[in-house]
Image 1 (spheres, rainbow, N blue to C red):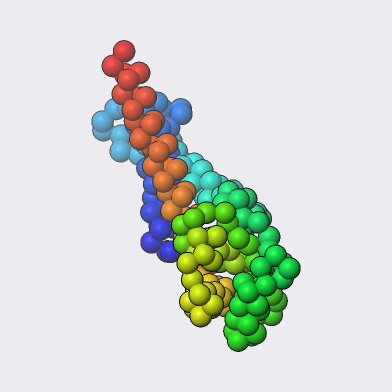
Image 2 (cartoon, one colour):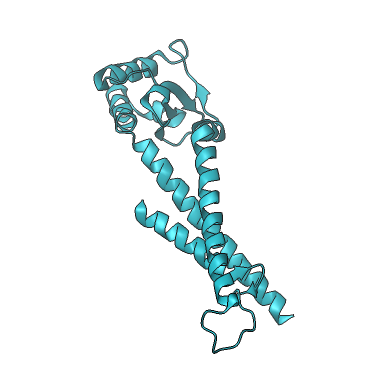
Length: 196
């Protein structure tokens, strides 16, 4: 996680230094060679700091969006439908049994995803607000004992707060990818503008 943060900030610095709006592409202006600490050099260093600020701001925005509604976005994107005991008693009972066995403070919300592929996931930053989702394909293929094993696995993710760490790592990686795209597109369009 620390390494990804360092890469993100380094990438921000590089982008800021290369695409300095005041100095043009590569942050270069015509300066005498014998002045090592010319105002242009100092300005380029400030551009790198602006790049770091941009990278940190991007990470902060993605973090706020992910933490404020990431689980809702994920469940909506997968077309998950909330399940009660009346809709699927076996699934509800299995989740409740695993919740009791793991001593979770609250019952996770349960969702079924209308997808034939066998899959399951847990979401939510805290055990009190967690959700468990399984696909219709998983429910159709597994017996009760197998389903219990899958749900136990997902409950363990909730219990150990794996979702929080995966979310943070995903945000960090997503920020790095976005900044890399900015860098590559900037290089592409700058080279096209310079060749014209």
